[in-house]
Image 1 (tube, rainbow, N blue to C red):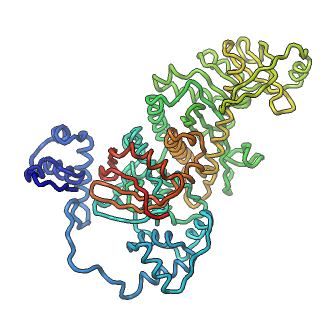
Image 2: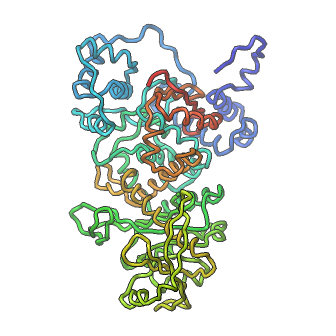
Image 3: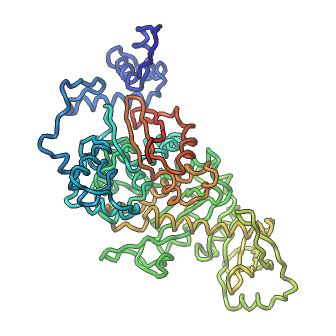
Length: 590
């Protein structure tokens, strides 16, 4: 956008571009018309050489397509805007209200259909037609209303974000607050350099962010509808006009292999390590992802959520107890190889040289691996903390320990308070384990029978050892969150996605929420559902300009905290949004 300046040098307009679009135009002109190399343009314009090549590729594709619209110069259409002579707009608005759509939901649907109506225009149509205000309803009920609408509203086909000016409403405008963290930690570059596929119309970054947008928005995919395609704010998150239809998600997922997911997770792990987000401890646990099909290719696994064994996919998750980040996931676990998962995780973790020196402790439950593998961990210098399986003879041995030999210690909890437990420790030898083991028996732990903790670390203080294992329950909490908020166990929904890819996208989305709330005082340990309800589930008006995306968020109690936090990201530009900046404001309405 040009600034008013009485002393402006007019020649500087052609040498000092003031907007990203102007800057791209001059760079492409230098490449095609003046014969500059990509390296020369990068040095002159501040781009990287790879960015210049991407711009050249996109420009060629744009001109080679059947799109008659100029990539940079918009033709001004003379005359007045067309009037709704046949009453199509009014008829559509009234039909949506008859299905109990709220005014904001009607506005979003009309925006997706190509009608840019204001709230006041819609209210006037409804008032003139004799409709009263709807009673207050919760978000779940409103979402069910939108998804059950018949006939289905047909959103436009997903395509790259247009360079034209645009303005629309979104019920999830707050979701755009996650974008700065994608750029800040270089996740967009990791996606762009990954092995994941891309299509002619939708880039690799936009493809992956389309999946992430669904995950972050808590969309319940079992409804088998495309209602989320109508919200253009979710499309903007991925650099598209709207998100693709359900069939596209299934088709894209079918091209994903396990090697692609492992490579992507390794690159993400490098980001976490380089930003000092991983501690020396990793919690490991299994979860069962149910399968509801008629075929029987899966084994029975115990599902803690349903408290029974059922046909399912066994998945493993690795979590850092300090940051809450998930650093590994695998859904290819079978019963005959379940005990070796801990060694496979070590191979994955140690593939990064920095991580190789960092990891010291693995924490898991009694059934996670075998005693033979505990010996292998000890040989490789890895300290482990786990629970030993109870046997009748061991229980009798514990009951025979004299009361005077037990001692009480206070274990500090995360909130600073302490809990007193009764403990006794000794060394022992166990079958199939090379060497002696340190065993700690814990009473007053909330259970009728004492817990039996064992480790190969003989130096860590008892209180620290017990606290380290107690934090393993955090990974169980995270798994419950994956199942609930990120709908990990709803793979029989309308969107058929490969389970391992779905888990990888869940890990990325979970970590984005953890990074987002990391510096929010009082919210850093909140679950994703809480962060979504208080911050990212925020409606607003979005204005897309040549170099700027302006987001006016509707007022709510937590908005001042959010806006203050987002002020630090004003200077970030987003390549998949045409190198635009994003600015967040408070709207004038609630």
